[in-house]
Length: 160
Image (cartoon, rainbow, N blue to C red; front, side, top):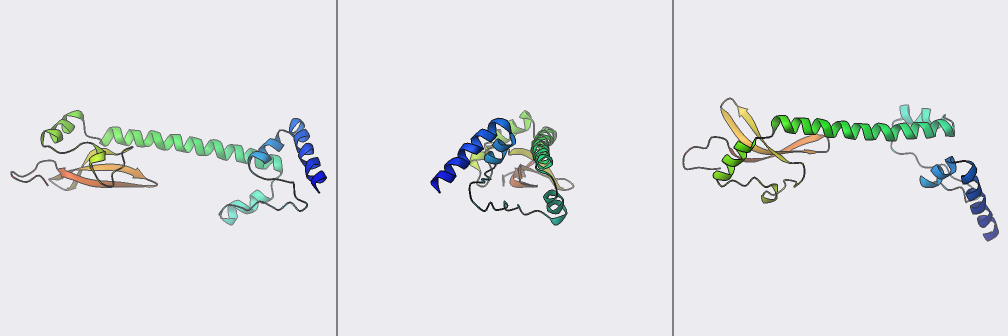
């Protein structure tokens, strides 16, 4: 048995030189060292995606995997650009930050519970006409979260 596993390892190494796809298979964690190679478990995909994939050739599946990787990277980059654009449009300017600091209101996310130190920014929300408030805002997965800071125009004698 040890002889056989050693032979398979040597054969796999030899095939890697001839067929670069073997490296892809090895990198993705699929091994053919057992007598009964089992089909890899599928991710939780809807049938309309999984069924057509299972009918594809290995070469076609490798092309699909490459495309899926590139598409995911593109979507991440697009999302980051959109987040930066939204932040540029909504974040308060330096004058507003200075105003908050003069009122002794912290502008550092570390000073607030449940506000992430990365990606959060201060924005102004108008909850109803004439009622404007400062909020921390950040992205959490596919949704936006925010945390109240203070009113934009406080009444005399109250800051919260």
